[in-house]
Image 1: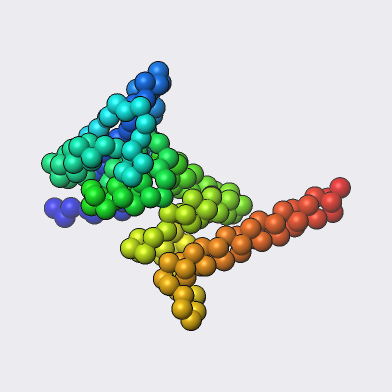
Image 2: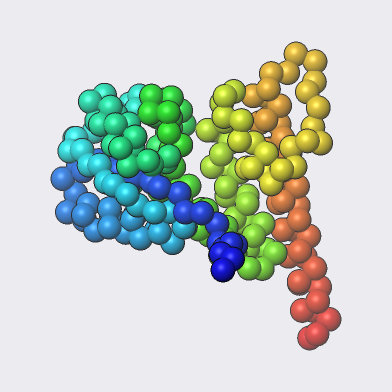
Length: 199
């Protein structure tokens, strides 16, 4: 008997992580984060929590907890950690560097879910703008994920004299955002004209 191959995308193993600042709804938000991860086709294989009054400026978690996350990810074969908060660009970069894992914060996870569920062209455009605006301050030279972030369309740009790769990436994202905003505006004007004609 020949085994049929599934067209379903392979689920990625993730750890959900968060810092408790004594907020009463922390348990609820962690449970919700796990459900959001599952909704975006991740498999939650572990959870790491830390109690802190304030997140560490450099890596969000304290250094000992960063080591614990890396070790647990290795044991659980997790390739990604999802944070129950919005990270600053530097926190995201530093955490990825120290854990050697892909890091997603709550905001990015929600944007990814919206992107998967957007149906109309306008909705898809609005979500892409939000994703690009989120990604813009988080670009860094070693990210190398620009093609994915702009739908593979980065190839049209060429680097100017003295322009670094990071500057080029930022220029590409800003150009894409401007293009999408014009598309939305044109679509809105077209809708208004069609409504006026019907009336």
